[in-house]
Image 1 (cartoon, rainbow, N blue to C red):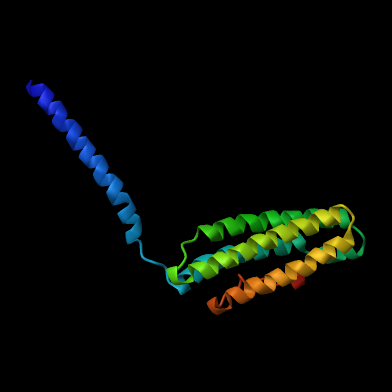
Image 2 (cartoon, rainbow, N blue to C red; image 1 turned 90 degrees about the vertical axis):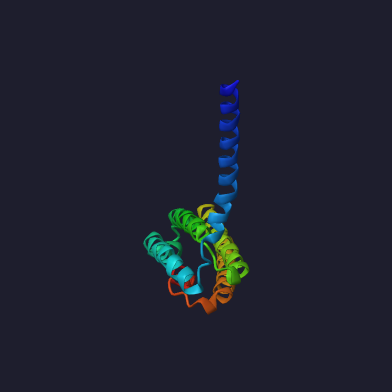
Length: 168
């Protein structure tokens, strides 16, 4: 009978440890300090810089391709740029946001996702040979980018500011 009591105590102890871990893990995550705005900017800027440099390489000379009527190759480059941006947006979305700025940053991230969608639409339109439709999407992209920049202007971003005029 003594071994049965020992097993019962072991089970109770195990359950108590599991319960303690279930409670402690969320508390440990909650103890993590809220990042400040400058800390957030410092973490996000390198992501934006890498994306800006990648898209500069991808889209270099794309304007000339469109003017020369090489719409298919130009379209593929816009689609590649959209893919690169999508990867960066996922990285940015994963960065912890300051609580006070969370809503503003979520709005900004939605604009970045929309930018990716417009780049894809431009690419698809160009691949289909529809330069006029691509121009319409480019206008919408510029409008979206201005909204994104205005949303986070107070953050003082350098590389996270969007300037699509270099490519369109």
